[in-house]
Image (cartoon, protein in one colour):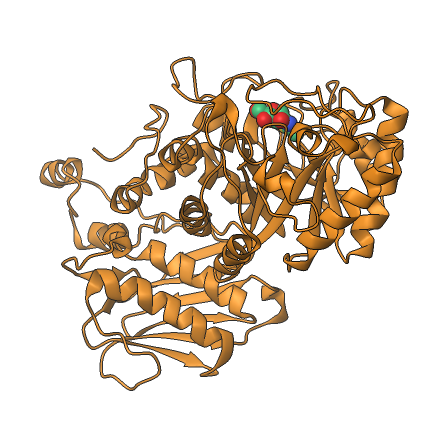
Length: 529
Ligand code: TNX
């Protein structure tokens, strides 16, 4: 990123002014005006332009070309955000005399599916992209270029300036995920929507929902109704649990899609299946249903690999979930199957994959699935905390050797459920403490040895919920770490650097305050007071 470099000899008065943060000379004033806006994720290219800032006013409007279809939906969503806080009418595609925001479909092929260009001058903000998705990502950037109070849900006083800039941007990786465990504790639709709103601000494009584990089955399957009604009737600690109806799930899928986020459903198997085994005795090898489980142990349950009924069950489950999932992937779990003998595990993964394929989905699983042969186009999710060549990292290389691409979620970096430090009241620490710098300061392509950039599909930040019961808990663990993972997924490796990042991160805090986000005030970050 380029920054104007100009040396000025300071007078004493100027030095005082400087220490107060005031512009000193006209040249200094120009230089501070040219300070780059603090964006997360950092765009691929960002340059200050000379000339006055753009000002959104009561006479501004939003213009879209073409004036129909998805670009119009993106424009209406932007107008919805801006009208609430500015109180301006901001008509869409009706002539007005003030400075305009213009959204256009088009631009060079190099922008790709999610890329965009944004040019802000005194006259207009122009966002150009080849897809509605690209326009949406550009709108996300525009929101960060406006003052933090633009995120408020009530009228705020202006001014509403956008610095004069030129941005050309596209993501490094196609998969930039967040995972939410709704099994250990159940989170209602409204909480998941809130999380979708927050992650979309950082250009996250996948929400992986961990829908079934030992402690709860959280989605209706009509052909096996007790999974939800009985298997979903409790959670860690013995509370009431809950589950999504198909309509709830479809509501979440649509809400996510409006933010260009794809929902990836996970039904963990063959381990982590106590809720299913408790719901149907016939799924157990011995025909006896275990009790529901409300503790936090892992690795004690397994589907019965030898029983044909197991695959009839999975065929029904995958079919019903695939029917209501427009995204390409079905996550079959596959982690910590400590009670499934190794040969059985491989047999199981071999048998489940064609079922997933038959229902039109591609497979993703935790990286243990590399023990089996993998169908072309499969992804494996690397979660072991090990780095470099350490034991544990071979699972990622195995999966790549089987033809899979990797979603990188190393627990020692990307797990949002790890405590920040010893004092953190929530979370676990089996993978160590993960402070904000730890979660940001790594490279998805090099954290495990022996991988190429092209082996990496992207990154994902999992949030397991053994200790989390409410949305404020989710927020506290995700913020401020989630924006860092989002940046690792989006921004070019060359833009990486903690010293600059921590300033950009600090600049997000006023936005979180306006949005009421319960974030952790890490001492590593120079928060504005
Ligand atoms: C390991 S990571 C698990 C989960 C736990 C998590 C807690 C992985 C694929 N499995 O079952 O919830 O640790 O951090």
